[in-house]
Length: 341
Image: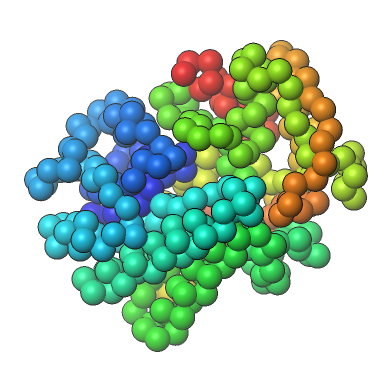
């Protein structure tokens, strides 16, 4: 079975690639490397002991093609040269802060790129897609924990771009019920692979909490900025649902197996169901790593919400999936990856 993985050199995509290859799937990775590194793909190759084929038209288990999903030409070539059975779609920009500053980039990359991909899939009769969505589609949800039935009201361009693509996929199924679609709403992925060969690599300025914490712990930054301590939470800082990237990768495998059973639309939260504040994460990281994190409180950021954590019940019911790692595991694995890289 041939799987096209868009954005497969990224943080989550790389971990899913490992699982796919370990299970015997053939994968073709397409990535423009705008916020990822080709070295990640070579490290995947080391983990699974399978050679990486770079942009050559040969039958291989692990192929990489550098291209942008907004460009129809390389996509059509991939689908014409390989019998693609399913697509796992990670490619896109992912920073709330950056999306507020440059919304046009987010609509171009995340929306236009996705629609271009889906149109090519339709032309080549490939109708199985797993889409990397986000808990940001819920916005500042009044329902906590957040269920899949909660109102979608994204309050930043990143979340809006994800909701637009979700709506497009739902409409695809309404028009043609032979599609097999999984929409996975991630909460906050952290951690790293147990090998320490792949993890969250910051090509550009970090946008997430854990990379900043690790930069302070390693001495690259002097201080951690915590944005807001006046939220209605137990310590005033924002609360999020952090999930280990390994748990997240299993969610994609479970989704792929479910889609193989019948045409359908699956929409699930992938989270632990536990909310931790920014200060909870800082203290847990300090406890696990014995590193002191110096921080200061800054003003709130545009687009941030006070509390966001999942009700993961539906993923357990329909995918037989649930998170297994706790916050200490996530902090430990993130730091171990940082030390070795």
